[in-house]
Length: 65
Image 1 (tube, helix red, strand yellow):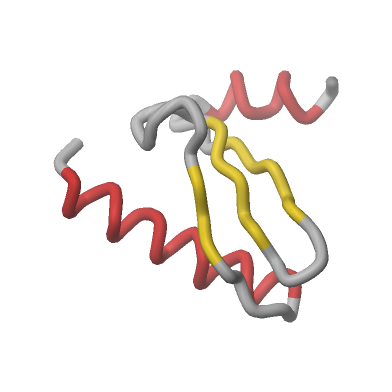
Image 2: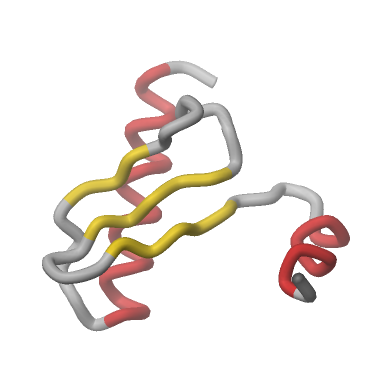
């Protein structure tokens, strides 16, 4: 994935999170690197940890944890 692709993906995640949560996203960080699955969405008073998984079965298993 190129830097441009990860920037576009981050922008899309921010847009979706803002719509879902009804709040403005201040920034998105990826502590382990942007090609990893775990990202943090920073809001004004909270941080939400999200994962992105292209494999629906793995994503479903993680929701059970």
